[in-house]
Image 1 (cartoon, one colour):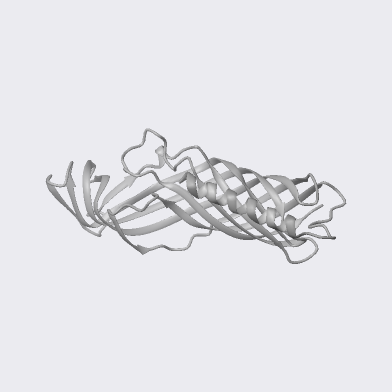
Image 2 (image 1 turned 30 degrees about the vertical axis):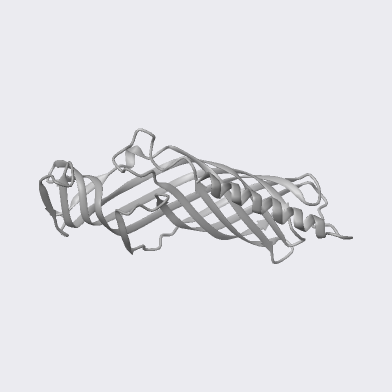
Length: 258
């Protein structure tokens, strides 16, 4: 995963360096004050996933859209016409729901009050819902009067954590692929439920990159990609074999307050 973030950093540096080399008589930005305050609203789309995708997950059959809205206030300190640093306080919801077809996928479920663990083949519904405060710290680089790039780390403190779902329309081999076979149906009393909400981290961190395109004197359109590095669950959680990383993109608008 680290190589992806190195590539991001190299791309941002290359773009900023190219813009600076091509700049002639006019500066990329003009500002009467080195401090800017903005308000932003954004819509997040993404999910939590292992990287790379394991062969045990065969297909994604359903991915309904969630109302993942975010609101935040940011403070930018410009050091010159091109470079600056931005921090913010954002309140965000990052939720997803998936229905995936799996084969020999390690699961721990509860059915009829009994906990069973083993290799499951069938459909797995996963529901993730997270509400959080996020603080990013990003270097900013103005490519022109209208376009600027941002990149840097972020830290999220979760105020609500949900990670649950159920396995259905398949069978579970208890303990290992040759263990006793348990059939799971589609009805509520036939499926196998799970809830790992208590194993979700209270704090997450990662790396984000974004672009702002100014469309009016104080209004900009924004796009971001945030890639979690810490993983969704605590380090001692091993029920799901692969580490799940929160990866969300967003689009939104920003308004400069001052």
